[in-house]
Every structure is written in structure tokens, then in C-alpha cells.
Amino acid sequence: MEANFNLLTYIFLLAAVILSLITLWRSNRFTSPLAQAALIMSFASLTLALVLRSIAAGRLPFATLYEFVLLFAWGILLFYLISRWMIKSDLLTVLVALLEVIILSYSNTLSSGPRPLMPALQSVWLQFHVLTAIIAYGAFGLSFCLGLIYLLKEKGYDGIGESILPSLAKLDNLLHWSVAVGFPFMTMVLITGAVWAEEVWGRWWGWDPKETWALITWLIYAAYLHARKTYGWRGKRAAIMAIVGFLAVLFTLFGVSLLLPGAHSYV
Amino acid sequence: MSADAGLFPLTTVRSLVYTHSKTGVMVLSGNNRERPHFAFLSSMKLGLLLLLLLGVLASLGSFLPQGQPAGFYRAYYGEVPGRLIVLLSLDHLYRSWWFMTLGALLAVNILACSLRRIKKAPDLRSWGSVMLHLSILVILTGAVISGVMAQHAYVEIGTGDSLDLTARGFPGYALRVREFKIEYYENLQPRQYISSVSLKTADGQEIERDIQVNRPLKFKGLKIYQTSYGWLARGQAVINGKAVPFDLPSGRGLDIDPGKNVRLVFFFIPDFDEQGGRLHSRSPLPNNPRLVAMLFQDQQVKAKEVLAEKETKAVGGYPVTFSGYRYYTGLEIKKDPGVGVLYAGFFILLVGLIIRYLVPEKHERWR
Image (cartoon, rainbow over all chains, first blue to last red; front, side, top):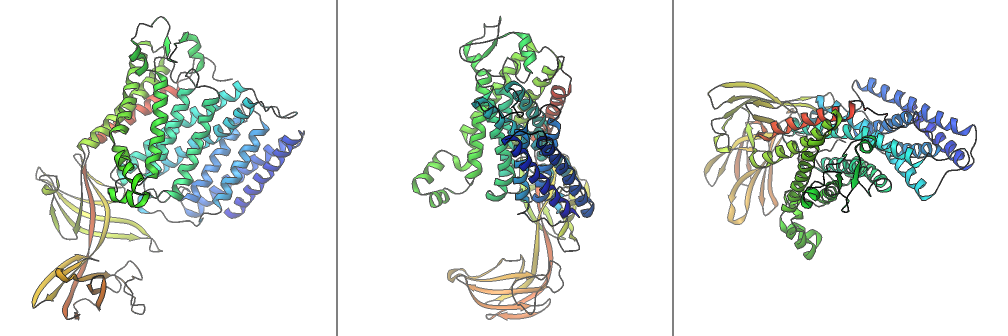
């Protein structure tokens, strides 16, 4: 059952990519709402897949890289849906749908079998650590897409026909909002991680690559929040920082797991 | 990170009337009497630069293996780059003087701008922001205390054995391991490692506890963690007419003739595979416990015998008796006065975040 809904999610996302690209290419009354509907459906179907997986495993899907990649995709979709209350942009739909397709394609290369919780993961801190990470990374995913749009708009690209890009000020405001939501949760990812590491490994900080890259992510977004208030650093430079920040998130999740061995071996 | 708005929303900034000085430092108008170096130390630009610089340097340390001997870097990265890495302390980057100096500079920057802002804090939200900046200083203080004062010791104790911890840096404490056991899932994946211990404390108490992964023993600032485990094999070998008893972790051995590099090494296999005959256990459970005794000369196996319990066999002319086996448990013992300070910092940080981000703004948010 879970596999069916994963497939369905993937199909909805592909449909969203195609429909939103058509909208960009030749603005159209039907494709834009259809693309958004496809993204909403993919969110519903991914939610169902995660619920079914939780029921089958008898625990929340918080234990393997595969499970976290699904949650990561879910968090970004969640923040995309929230952003629709504040901004309407077909380019944003394209970027989010593309990002989701890439993330879910990657998840297919990971081993998806359910595993019982190893001793190190049997902690209440696991739940807090992962929950805060879903929210932080979801918000950062949205800010990444908004940062790209900001740079495009700043370069003079304005969109075609109906799908005109939002104003720079509006983009900047929403970008700041999403980082300002993500940052406190990223802080909590670090705090819960430190308290948990103290309980499980006997050291609250050990410069393990995963820890180090989570801290680097935090430093970049802290820099973003300050840059936005500093003369000569707001606007374009801040947008670049938001983009680099999410690249650090991606590296923490995927680069470190693949390239840099450490104590954080399960995810 | 400076006297100006910091994390304040733009609307608040406008309402306060700020001017930009030539250095890019934002200074409250009408309060320009501060000396320039203080203005620089408390400037947002310095803070911004330090945040990004620390990020870049921290990433460098994640790509370079840390804490290896100097020879490793020369062998792996080449003679000149290897020497450069050691010269610049990149082999212990996070403990290098320049990394710590940058961290200290960031602390000074945060302190300087927080002090300026305390004088000017206009509303509750800015107090939240000041709190979360000051909490970073408390956290850094906790880190310094941890780094300077924390005591660690790793011990391996066989089940039934006791160890006086005085010599390991914890005077007056003694630890006895009553039992060690592993719980398994149905697929034989470990579910939990449990050491049942008695801790004799410095004031003469004796406390009995189970130590598990994620559930360390805590007593008056002392913490004991379940970290590792293994098998001990017990028996005796007759070497040159003399009986030598052994009680060793699997994989260790006895020197027979150090001059010729001859060693007798013992491997304990809990579930020996009779058909395969290899040093491989079919399962982690002691269903078919065997001692594999091997006589090595210069890394070469000269003789090998598989012994059941209570059995005696000659291994290359040396009679070996296998009398029994048991677990040992690997425990990490630690006292870290920095953790309390750290957790206080975390608490202030959380309260600061809540005030800063959840107290509603007076003006409309972003639309």
C-alpha cells in the first residue's frame, strides 16, 4: 500500500512539473490551477504513504535516511502550501515540483526496508530532533526557491503573460519570513541533538561531520538574518545566502551521509 | 549583533531613525560619541563576517581528517601540503588557537552589541533578541568549561569483576559489574545493551543500577555510559613447561618468544560453524562456544586448534586449556561541569526565541 502511494506521489509531482512548465511557456487559464492541484494531491498522497508506513512499522518513520528523505520532501511541500496564502507564483510551483522530483528520485536509490530501532535511536530526543528538522528544512527549502526567484527577478526576468513574478519587496519579505520560521527550529535541531548526544554518546558536541554541517547551516542562516539588517548586505547578497544555506542543508543530509563517515551513521 | 536593529523587523528599524556611518556600522543617531574601535567591535558587519568565516573554516575541518599523527598528512596529501596542514594546525582545526580566537572575537562582538542594545531595548521582542544573543555567550562559556574541566575515562570490566576508579581520575569510586546482557529483536538485531552495576560512591553509599544505551547512570555529576562490549576467554597455556593462565578479550594473546615475534592468539567464537570452520560466528548467541587458538610467527599462522569448553589441545606444541568465557562491558565514565552551564544557555536561548518570534509585533507583519 505504501509503495502505491509513493508511486502516486511521484506521478502527481511529475504532472505538476509538466503543467507548471507549460504555464511558464504559454500562460494558460487551466494549467496553472491544475499544476497547483497536482502538488496538493502529491502532498496528500505522500502524507498517506507516511501514515501507512508508521502503522506498518508501529513507530514514526524517523529512523532511516530513506524515511527522513520522505519527511524532508513532505516538509518542503507543506511550506509551499502555506506560502500559497501569501504569494502566487507559477515559477515557484515549477521550482518546488522540480526539487521534490529530485528528492524523491534520490529516495528510490536508498534502502527502504523498515528496520527495528537500534539502541542509539531509542530516545525521546529522536522525535523532537526529527520533528524540528522537518520544519526547519521545509522552511529553508521554500526560502531556497524564493531566493532563486529573487535573483532571476533582480536580473530582469519578469515572467510571461499571466505568470508575472511578484515584486522584489514581496519576494524578500516572504524569503525573510520563511528563514525566520526555519531558524528557531534549526536552533532546536542543534539543541535537541546536543542533549541527545550527551545522553547517548557522553559528549554533547564532538565535531562529527553531521554536527559540523548542521552548525554551518545555522551559521549561514544566522548570517542571513543579520545581513538583511546590514547596509550593503540586504537584497541580493541576502538572497544568495539563503540559497547557500539550503545547499548546506542538502550537503548535511546527503553529502555528509555519502562522503564523510561519522558517528551519525543511521541518517 | 550591533546597536542597531539586529533581528528586529524593518518596521521597527524605520520607527527608530538610524543613520549609516562611513564604515558601514549602523549607529543610533544622537549617540555617536562611542569610540571607533568599540563601534567596530560591536558592528553587525564584523559579526556577519565572523559567522561566515567560522562556517567556512568549520567546513574545512569536516573534509580534513582531524587528530591524525603528522605522518599521516604527509603520506596522504604529499610532503609540502602535509607539512602545511600541520603548520597551520588544520589537523586539529577546532582546537587551534586561530579558530578559538575567532570564536572569542564573535563572543566579544555579541557581548558588545548586546550591551549597547540593553540600553536601548524598546520592547519585549528586542529583549527576546538580547536574551538569545546573550545565551550564545552562556553556551560558549559552557563549552570552555567542558573543554577545560571535563574528565573522561573509558574502562572495560568483565562481568563479576570490580574496578577502583580512583586511578582513573574519580577518587573514592569503585564499580562492580554484576551482569551484562544483550536483548535482541527477532532478526537478532540488537535491541538493547544492559550492564547491571554496583557503584560504590565516595561517601560510602552503594547504588545498584542498570546502564543502557541512552540511559546512563547519573550520580552527583558523575555519568556512566554503555559504550561497548566484548567476550573474554579464560584458560591456561603451558609455555616452556610453565603454566600461564589467561583471561583475555577475544583477539588478544600471549607472547611466547618476543625476540622471534612468536605469539599465541585466542579468538572466542560464540556460535562456531563446524562446517565452515572459519573465525565466523553464525549468530551472536553462545550456542556453540569455541576457543580458536592460533600460533603466529611474524603474522603467519603456524598452528591452529579449535577447543570446546574444558578441552585441552596442543597448539604447535603448546598445550592450551579453554576453561570458560564471559562478557566484558565497555563503559565511558565522565564528569563534566560544563553541561549544567550549557543547559542553562539552551534554556535562555529557547526562552529568547519564544519571546523574539512568538510575541506579536505591534505593526503588521509582512504584507
